Amino acid sequence: MSSISASESDEELVRLAQDGDTRAFDELVVKYSPRLYGLVYHMTSHKEDTNDLMQDIFAKAYRSLKRFRGKSSFYTWIYAIGTNMTLNFLKKRKRRATWSLDDVDSGIQNDEAMVDIGHASNPRHQSDVNELQKKLNESMQALSDDHRAVVAMFDIQGLPHAEISQILSVSEGTVRSRLFYAHQQLRGHLEEFLR
Amino acid sequence: MNQSQEEDVQKLIRLKRHESPPEEYFENFLEEFQTRQRGELLKQSSFGLFKDRVATWYREQGAVKWVAGAGAAYAGVMAAVFMWPIGNPTKMDDPNMQPASYQPNKGTPLPTVDFPKIENSGSGSTTLREF
Image (cartoon, rainbow over all chains, first blue to last red; front, top):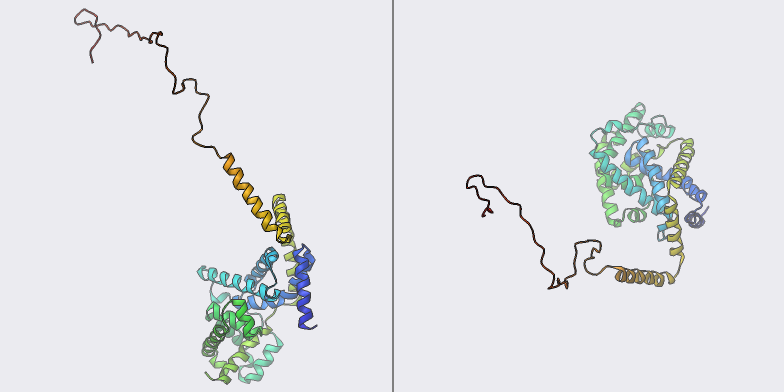
């Protein structure tokens, strides 16, 4: 499916959903929830928080759908809602005394791709996949929320700079400088796996 | 940090792409979302639905909506001007109230008050006490 037909399809689904067709909105949920999950999860590093936030994001998108004018793609629009809601959530979570880095999930230690890449990059660390995953999560959590957002969107999700700048309402230069600074910090945290 | 070092960091971070929930998670997610969405729709009051329909109808109008909106605002302002009470409202049910122009008839004697007599046991005579 080409990107043009995909965007046409989105427009049609949005129009139908705006007219009250809940099944059309369900299709948008099915289409975008995996990608949105990736964004939210890599910003929160917490599965339950991610699930709650995803429900809230789609509920808010559904309520606000009539105000969506199509100036940007639906994808950019819902990503902007998701990013803003997640950043607000993270601010609140920081104020909660009960949350700590120990709550960060560990869910990929048995992922084949992760194990293979861990092995290929450095055989010495083959048995340290758990450690690598833990370290990756901790390094991500050590970044500021804004820096983590750009890393999640650019490095993990593969969004281009221009799209990230639109989602975050900042210039492309700001996106690039946040990325550079974030990579510097990550390099410091992940030094042992980079040798 | 040079470009190759930056690329190394990016390669490592990209490993996080493999962190994704199983397929069934998204099926359950949709079901959960639908349940929640229907619940919200049921909670919405009939007035809310009416308001929603009016808002949708209004949005669908072209330039007419601005004329209609201005007309409705003008009608509202005029209704408020004509219906607003001027000055303090007068209470008409007070039985002691007299109009400001009321003058008692000169032939009518003024009302008198009879004071009770006070006994003064010391002097033996009965007089009014002076204040």
